[in-house]
Structures are given as C-alpha cells and as structure tokens.
Image (cartoon, rainbow, N blue to C red):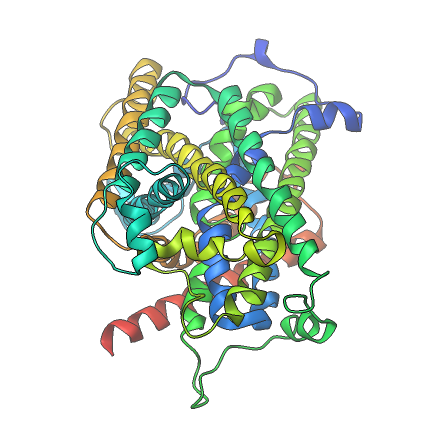
Length: 484
C-alpha cells in the first residue's frame, strides 16, 4: 500500500488528513499548483517561441497552437491523479514503468537528457530578462547601441542584468517555500497577461494590423506552412518545437505533481486504504485538482493565443526578416509588436512586462527544477529517499546551483532563441514518453474507485496519440535538419 508524501519525500501521518472543500468558493481557495505552473509556462513558450512561430508563418498554425494548449491537460490530470492516489513524485512513478534499467529506468535517463536541454533553454530565458532590463535601464549602454546599429557583438549590459536577476532568484528561493513561490508567480503572470490581451484587442481598432474573419478561419484549418517550392516551410520545425513548450510542456508535466504534493493534496487525502472515507476524500481532492488544471489552462491559453496573434499580425507583416525574433535582438524585435497600437512608449510597457513574464519562468523553473533534480538524485542513490534533511539540503543547494548554470549558459554568448527552441525540441520528444507513462498509471495504478469514465479514457488515448505524432514529427524534422 502506498503512503502519501509531500515533495520532500517524507510519508505523511493521518493527523494531516483534511476533508476536501465542497463549495466553489472554498475550492477556489485551495487552488494554486496550476498557477505556479502557469508562471513557468507563460514565458519561453508564449513570449518567445509562440511569437516567433506567428512571425514566421502568420495565422496558418493557430489550430496547432490551440491544440498544443489543450491536448496535454489529460496527461497532466493523470499524473496528478497518481500523486494523490499513491503519494508518489513524478520521477518515482515514471521509474516504475517497465523497460530497460541501469539503476533507474529508461524514462528517467531520457529525462536527464531533457533536463540538460532545458538548462540550455533556461539560459535563453535569463538572457531575455537581461535584454529587457538592458533596454529599459541601460548601464554601459553597449547593448542598446548594438541593437541600434544591428551589429551582433558581445555586450555586457544584458549580462550584468542577467547576473542581478540570478542573484535575486537565488536569494529568494534558497529561503522561499511554496506559498511565496505561488504568490510571486501569480503576480508576475497577471501583470503581463492583461497587458498583452489588451494590446491584441486594441489591434482590432486599427486598419493596418487588425485581424479579419477569413484570417482567423484560415488559421483554424489544419494546414501546414509551405515554402515557395511547395515543400514544408522552415516554420514547421519552429512550430513543433513550440508545441513542445506551449501549454503544459514536458518540464511542467513532470513538475506539476511536485507542486500538488507540496500544496498538500496527497497529504490531505491520507494514506491509501480500503476505507470508503479515503475514497471520498480522494475523489474530493481530485475534483480540486481538476479545477486547478482547467483554470490554469484557460489562463495560459489566452496568453498563448495573444502572443501568437501579435507575432502573426504585426511581426509577420514587417518587411523581410526584420520581424523574426532572433539572437541578441530577440526582446527588441518582439517589442515592435506593441508600437503599432500604443506608439513608441508601448515598447517600454512591453519591456516591463517582458521582465515580469520571463523572470517568472526563470524563477518557477529554478524552484521546480531544484525539487525534481533532488528527487532524481535520491532515486540514483545519492542519499536515502526517506532522509528528509538530506533532501531539504539538496533542494536548497540546487536553488543556488541551477540559476548559476543557466546564467553560465547565457554568458557564453549563445543565441537565446536557439537555446529556447533546443529545449522545446527535447520537450516535444519527451511528450509521448510522458503520455505512455500516464496511460500505464491509468491502466495499472489507478484505484478503481477513482477511475474516470469512458469518455475521459478516450480523450486520454487521443491526447497520447497526438503527443506521439508531435514528438515523432519533431524528432524526424530535427534529424533531417542535422543530416542536410
């Protein structure tokens, strides 16, 4: 029989058991993990990759963006169901999936490979924070000057600000706990999402930038971008990499159960037993979890579509490649999407928002990454899984080490957009593996009293098939690009 645990891995006692809320008001008061995940989501995928996809392809891939936001939710709920039912962390659960093993199983080894790629992605994100600060509050002025002259050179202003943001992240996270992380991520996401949605709505009152009904209808048709010669366009790989990041990406799918455990859903449910009272509590906390998942999905879907429309309507219509966010001009190029509506001063509003949304991703990513990597190290036997003190120390150390790693990546001068898309490719390939794991948990580890209906199971299967197509397509296109 499994025992409930929090993200520290320590078993919970029956004294922690709580009845689930029954009213909508009380249910909403117990939400939170989804908002933390939204703080991680609305950043690299929505601000950078989604905007870049719109800039490259126009509205033609709107359908893919919408599917990418919704399709992963079913896998997310199943991973959360397992956490509440069996009190297991994501990696502990995935380590139980059959297959080749070398101390840990094949899925966890692939997760380690993805973690390396997402560390590179984190370098692109903290670089975006540095770029936004360097444009808003220049120190030496070298970065702003390089942007004005369109010369790709190594600059220090953005690096100094990236260092400062990293230092703040470490200072807060080393001592911060769940409630602080939830509050910070919620405030950061809300501050920028409303600005972006307002900008998109304001576009509709301009003749040059507004969307037409035919453009929206065309974007909802299952079409793929093609080049002048009829072959699939370069934007397709960007789109599939974006698919891996937008909505709940692989990193967020793995992280979500950790935040559910830390919030207390499994602890409140109590140790799994044959008592009907346990089943009633579990069903109630699962209902809270589903509210949490679907509400966060609505939030990040609105933000994702808004960023995509900005890229597709404004940046896509700029001449040549001037609207394609790339390299050291990443943030400056995206800022151009705000000028048509509000004028030049809107760029400064955007830069403030970019700082908020990119920093939220870096902040939450480091917090979640520290917990997951500590869990992975315990599965490798670095310390005992029941040693709560060792795990807590590992999390604190990693809250300092991981931000420094991502900063080091950006300090090399690497292209931040390429870093983000590299992480997106690995996340897209990981998606079908997580889908397979979710199906395995649903079929073998779900308490029959908590089993969903047939309609849910059908949607879960369709979700996993969609993730397999997206992951397989990404792997194929990436391999072909390497060989060509």
